[in-house]
Length: 364
Length: 228
Image 1 (cartoon, chains in turn cyan, orange):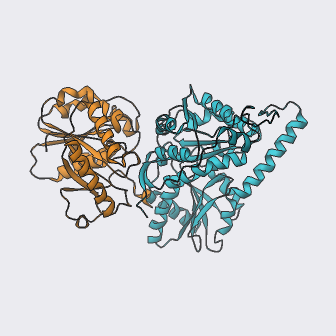
Image 2 (cartoon, chains in turn purple, green):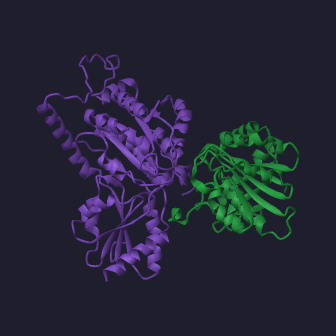
Image 3 (cartoon, one colour):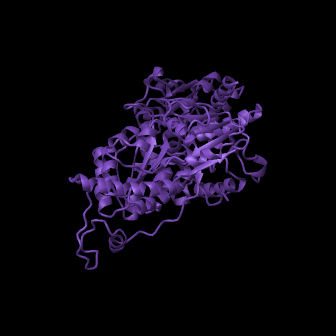
């Protein structure tokens, strides 16, 4: 079934998937390794009746997204690590005001301005958030361009359904590499009156509402503590529902595995090759690949073959961030180790395999 | 093959794989018309997958690589700047030089400052086309891309290179479909189709219905784990 596939660079495919998913508004500022996304949007969105605005900074971009989303627009934004850091205040505001947004982080090495090579050191940033207050953002981490396309395409609807920002986190490798993809069909675009009707909370103005004269207010300010507590409790009922409905993962070869890798994005692909290397040496290795990072797929860890598995290795392009969630999910059932490179360095699969072997030797 | 080979094309058309494969192929030849061999990496648009990342491999095979502005910073520097040293292989009449441009007209523009080296007739501008790239699926869009590069460079395209592929999902049918389109484009533009590339180890050239000439491409730029 390769006949309908096309070859695309990750960043181009992300932009095209968002357009096909219905996004017609994009606000952004170029930053490597995702600059092809705004480049593509600036060229392609106007052809679909959409609007591209190059913001003065990522701070401007997220607040434009806040305004456009509050007015009922289908908005997509993207950036890379330090740019997403600048957007954190806005993320908190959007969550509080329950404004939908599809956002993407094509992450690079940090901290600070860091470098431009792939990294996964924004795990805490996207799953814990750098904004203030009690809030949550669903985060999905694709391991291929096709998976990213599918998640972004679905993401426009998820954001509207949950009235919350939805984040897709891809490391720079997935943004910069090329892969064959099958693009989904264009979703129908809603008319202004359809938006006013379906998004019955959005500040669309009265003209498109067929006589409905009720005021609509989108805000994050609640001065009375009783009201604010009530609002946050309501948000957390929604987040609890997200935890059961949005948890996603894949497992491979867990049965009889001596060691289990936990890895997302590019690192999961490296671990797959490491599993083959280990198999050739007579060591059985399995893989848990979280697709949703928040909610973290704790259920996946119940599938581990606890009779056989001796250790779990969190493989990350960071100093070890997801490992905290891995430990929480395992709750002391197995020892947890880290295999990592950071700063834009990507481990080779033999390096990861050697780490697993050393861990198993050390446990003897 | 003339002394200066300039490889241009759409983002992701396969310029860099072709540049590295060609350099390795020429490096392996015994009787070369030029004693020295160089790759000039002029890609300042792309941060990853640039031929300078294969400097160690190429230099091991006697190919000089020019691309990094400051040799001390490694391959990852993201600077829209070029080292003056890369004029050396362009000026050296004993050096066969493969110039690997950045993608599209924007990426190709960098070559303009070296215009004086391309006034004579010892150069060839190759336009690489992949008819499975989303933005060059048709004759018309492919032609627009080639023409925009040509007009940006103010150099005529010497020949087209058919590099239609879907990486490891490439089939002989996909390749032959691209070949037919490349031939039509060649006729339409009045520019010869120089050769067709195929991914070595994935496609058996015997399955390509006798089309010629062919050139095998090694996947030098792509880490193996990406295909797991």
